[in-house]
Length: 212
Image 1 (cartoon, rainbow, N blue to C red):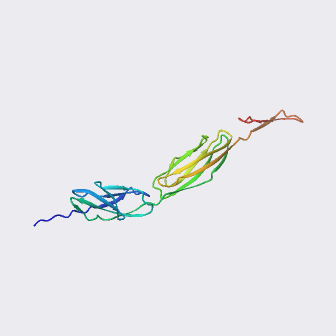
Image 2: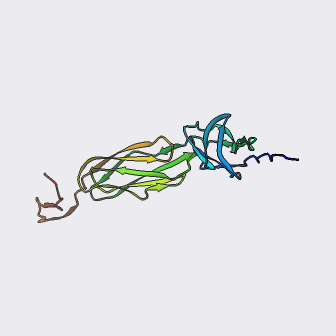
Image 3: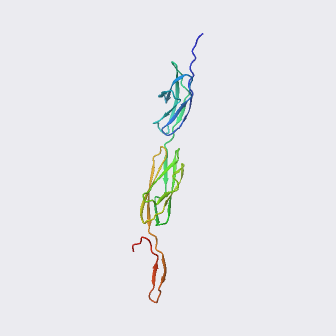
């Protein structure tokens, strides 16, 4: 009696690296297999010798299913078990807070922004663009929610702007423009001198930058 053993079907394993538009399909090797074919939602997506494949260009918040067959000699195995995968929802970044700030030269003022996100995987990266050099932030990344404190410490009188940009993987970036005004310091009046019946001298401290 002669016979031929039927090749064993591959075993598909859980997907990894799941993101909004990508995931990695995985499966176990089969003895003597010369190639594997991956099917996603019934469509052939890969044929080769690897036991994983990175899928891209997918749709966010969508269910996918994959299975694998193996070529062993002249035979093609039965399909593996099916693995279902849900791609992640597209992240959204939210930022709330006042965007105008007024202070006096050589004094410090702060603005606090509340940041939250939906479906974010990675930290939110924060970039500050400031040509004046008078603005600073107390952190450059936050987790899915938290606060950003922006400090404004002007050295000269004038109007200045800064830009906060928030980004995280797959989310549309959020940009906030901050308008700042630096007013001159208030003069300090000092005690009068030379007080007489009909006259006295009024005095005050000099202010740097004062023109009159």
